[in-house]
Amino acid sequence: MGALIKAEFRKIFTTNLWWALLIPVALIGFGAGWMGTAFVSIINGFAVLDRPVPLALLSVTTSANFSTVFGMLFGALSISGEYRNKTITTSFLTSNPRSAVLAAKLITAAAIGAGYGLVNALCASLGGLIGAVQDIGSFGDVADWLSVGGASVLSMTLWTLAGVGFGALVSNAVLAIILPLAYKFVVEFIISMALVGSNVSGIGPYLPGSAGNGIVSNLAVPLFVAAVAGPDEPEVPKVAFDALHLVFGGSYGHAWWASLLTFLGYTALFVAGGWWANQRRDIA
Image (cartoon, rainbow, N blue to C red; front, side, top):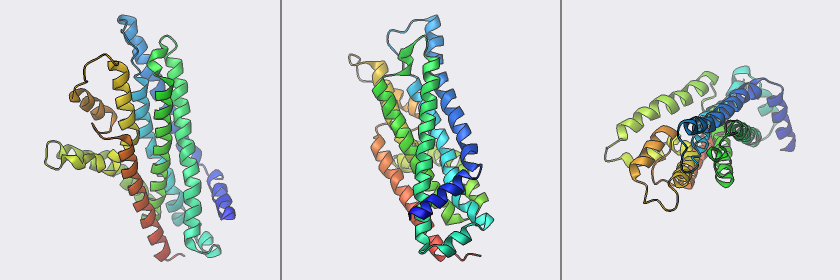
């Protein structure tokens, strides 16, 4: 297994895919962190707020949830691209069993996904600190920031693993790109809108995209509201949470760990499907 893992890392770092997808992850993280704190600084230039507004927690949430697309694409292309280029044939013919190859890919993909998430969080932190030069309160409490950053790393890792499973399942590089993007940004949006106000609206947080986004959003939104409202304020109305979740993702009253467990189930399902397909697919 050690030799397979080393071989997978060599495959990754001898191609351009990993760093080509890492660049937007870093840029999005930096831009989101900077805008989140800079916007509060602009507001304070016109009217001094009576308490810190850690808007960066929310902007970084958007960054994390959007950047997971690149982790997912990396995972999907790391194996479907090998089917397209026929390079996986050698791996399957020289390794026994085939599942060992998939296991090595999952281990390396998890490492790359965690690295993507860490880069996104660090760049967001750097951007947030630069934007918060005049108002460090807009950066948020350090513990809250670390919690949201840790959740974003975890979310990115799971999205990357789900991408590997899906790429192994379809084995077609074009479909491995188009189908996840179309579902996350089009299909699930339509389904979510259709569920609003219906008798089955409660299933919304359990949809794959919503669950994946909720890992970060369902943690960051309550932290932001608690920081803004303060301990002496009356209970924050549900409409405030709904408005924030509508913009930044997640669902009111749904715990972040529930989203984590839900998406972990989807990840396991895709990985199991990819393993099943790999065991039965002819290679040439």
